[in-house]
Image (cartoon, rainbow, N blue to C red; front, side):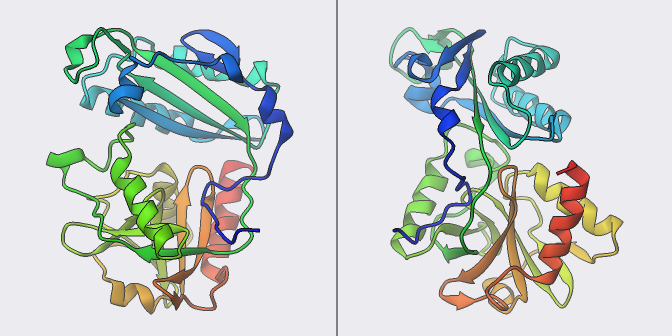
Length: 299
């Protein structure tokens, strides 16, 4: 058995072999849910996406996810070709077709569509967009806290590829994840362009020091919806929380560390660069935030 752990590790669920996937308005079995090799997303990573989670019949923070999707599409000059209500209707159609009521995760993807020739210029994408909704039965399953390794790959400046874009172009984060795995960790801890601790390759990052919660300034990381909900919960429940620059020195001496994301909510971190964080297990502040978040989402 491998010791590798992923922040997106889920329980095996045989029902996922029979899911229906929404592709441009049609629900298709998994083996038939295909897009063209000329699709902009496949060819160039030209597209944006959102991950959304179903708890007890409700898609959590759906409005915020729609806001972020349309903001990203506008930023890359991509016409989704559907209204917010139409996208939400498609999500609900896919949910009902798969008889899902809770513990489901959807990946909503929009690319610039099918290109006429295999080259970069967006004007060559003349049949589009391509819209896909993959929805799976998904319950997180983490056998132990996550191990992180700091990597040389940075979360960059907005004038290169803005880290706030949830784009299909994820190679920088994938390379970071590979580097972390080569170092014997589960996921990568990424610094910003100034050398401050920023985020992981897939999730937002927090530490706890003397009862206070710290996270990055937010300038160089994904504008995580779960990240913001955790900050809001801390402020509403008298947990000191700071968005600030901090270094690896601050991080190694933290009492607790955890990650946030739509899939795993709050995932404890036990080890960073071979150094145990606190007890190496889920800490009391993280546990309290988890409970507050569970109440918030009605989990």
